[in-house]
Structures are given as C-alpha cells and as structure tokens.
Length: 316
Image (cartoon, rainbow, N blue to C red; front, side):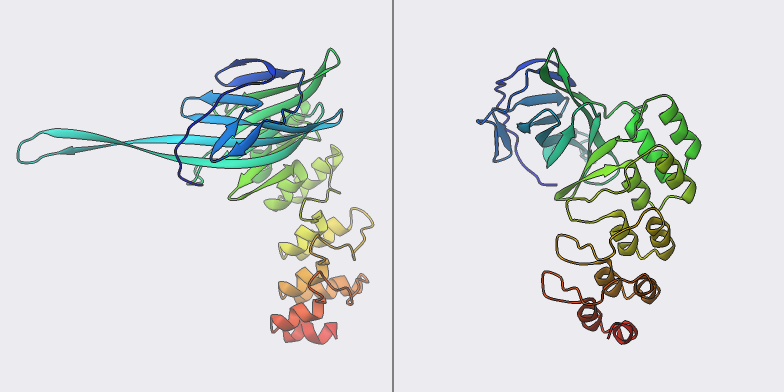
C-alpha cells in the first residue's frame, strides 16, 4: 500500500440515502464525470466514511445482469509518540500521520451479495464491505455496507470455515441461508484483485475432500475460468498437487489442451514446476506436447529452460 495525503472531494450525483457505514444508491446510473485521479475519486458515485477509513468509487457500467464498479479505499493512520526528559521530568507527545490506499475493480452480479475485502498493509487484519445489486420498483439499486467490525458476517465466516476444514460450520451457514452457492469475495492483494468463490477458496487453501464434496453438493461453480484464464485444473497443477489434479480431473471431461491467457497449457505449468509425476499423468491422459504458448514455447522448451533433463527426455 502507498503513503499519501487525502484530499477527498465529495460530490454525489446520484439519489442516495447514507449514514457513516452504509449507503443505498437508488436509480443507479453511471456518472461519466466520476473518475480516479491523484488519490481522489472526483465526483464519486458512492462515498462511505467510518472514522479514518473511506471507500469511494464509480459505477462504470450497469445492465440487468451485473454492475461493474471501481473502488478506492483509503485509511489514515495516526501515531502518537511520548517521551520523558529524565533530567527535568517533563513529558512530551508528538503525533504523526500516514496512510494506506488500495484500488479495486469488480463485477457485482444481480441479486448476489458480493464482498470486497482489503487486507491491511501488515496483513494482520482486513477491511470488508458487503455489496448488493438489486432492482427495486423496476429501478437499479446498489447497497454498500461496511461490515469490517461484524464478526458474524457470513461470507467471512464461510471462507474461514473452508480454511479450517470446518465442515459443520460451513453446513450451518448454508442451512441458515446466510451463504449461497454464488457467494464470492473480491479480494485485493497487493496491486491486483481476484474474484474468489467458495470453490476457489477451497483450492487456495487445499481443503480436504469433504469440503470439496459438500461444495459440489451445494452446486458451487467449479468450472470457472478466472481473469488469467486459469481453471480449477490449472490451479491444481500450479499448486504442484497430483492428488488434487486427479480429483479435479475426475469431476468432468476437461479439455486438457485448453490454454491460459498467456497460451500455456497445464503441461507447460507442470514442466515449469519440474514435476515429473504430473507430466507423466498428463501424458497418459493424452495431453498434447506440441502446443506453443504466446512466446512460441512448447512444454519441452520450458523444461529445457529449467534444465529439467528428466522431463525433457519424456517430452521429446
């Protein structure tokens, strides 16, 4: 996160009702004058301020299926230092200010509660917002809540349950209706954002098979393709996990020769990871050795660049 001075300009050009940590935007229309410039959202479509934390942004595009939104989060940090003069006994205090900021962009599906999570710079905590796009009286409406301090916020609890392999808690959240199959979090991580659904979270933390089976039972989407062109199959190879690969491979008839946005197949990734057991498995499954990525490299070329002679031999 970056250090900065905050000069917020608050000009709302939509009909809205708001309190400090909550805003309803009614009759939503993108505002062409809303833009991000020099750590400020000019003429923001929404603005929420809770203490030293603010979330503002623009509604870039909206239709009857989804809304594309830009978010700018900023946080002012105040530090007070105290000192005592050992000779005179006099004490003094100084106050300093610093800041953190983050930008994110995400697609908010209609009638689906989506969460935006922004970790603190030290990764010891995070800020979280709940976003809901609906139609009310045939007019688009967006609700934004600051749920950072709500320990019972269901999407956060669901992601935590998956991380802990807590199947009973996950079942409890589904049974109560607090989370659904399309629950997802837009996660800011460094300089990028990722849309994570519950199945992707299970992949990221390498959850146990019972968690995966339950998510499939609840019809959570496992056939997604993310903005990098990665699928669940890609991630299983990326994580160097042969057993996970076999499990994901068993869920459907995948196109093993499908490529990412960079033109890589999962064989390219297996070669890059120098993982001979995965290379052997993929070759037995019939994956092509001849596909070139966007740099014109085959899996053999990748293995050669890694000096992986065993893999080079079986890919010749």
